[in-house]
Image 1 (spheres, rainbow, N blue to C red):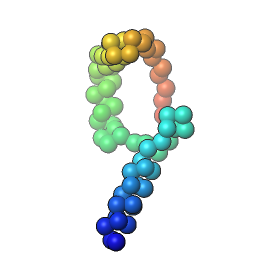
Image 2: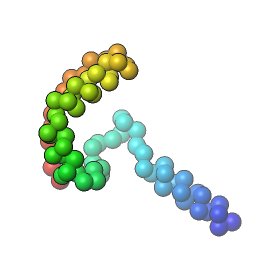
Image 3: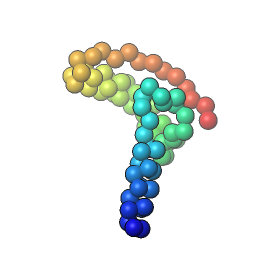
Image 4: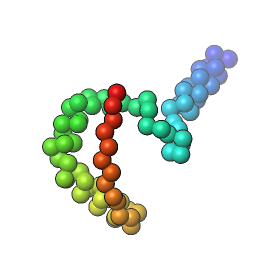
Length: 73
């Protein structure tokens, strides 16, 4: 019986980790080492932009438009 409850709790926790794209409002998500990864991303901005555009064009035959926005915590 204890194993069943534990499995149900784990399934509920897993289900609560996901939200549909249509319902997501951009809140409650943080990156681990955000400051460090932000520096790396900025240093490699052009390479990242090109890689993303190339990926979507190759995989989905879709052009990507860049939208830059800032977040405040």
